[in-house]
Amino acid sequence: MIVGSEFGIGYDPGQHAAYAASWIQILEDQPLEIFHAAADGEKIHTNLQSLQQQQSVSGEQLPTVKSEMIEEYDRLVDEPAARRELEKQNPGLVAARDSAVIEEKRKRLQQELAARSSRQSNSLRI
Image (cartoon, rainbow, N blue to C red; front, side):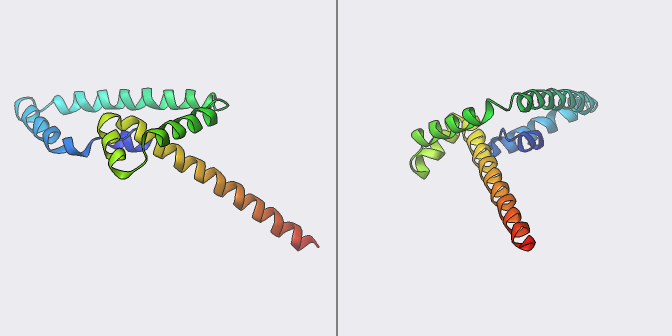
């Protein structure tokens, strides 16, 4: 869940109870298994960080891919019921689209703030 939220890949909260129940059973039978799981989780996190860094290095292609992803999502989803259905079928697409939209909004806000700051500093010079 933590890694999913950090990397914007989402998770299915409907599975938490079953997941926790399975871990309770595992830890009752094999208490040291938590150490193996933690080590595996760290390896997964490291690999995901590496993939994210590789993706950011090839950032020139990213805006096109993001806009295409947003367009594909918007083509598939035109109402809340369709979004819920798509979340069941392809939660990764929904999470990636939401992340892309947030990033696009953040970029626009940063550009607007930079332009506003530039205008203010120009007006102060006059």
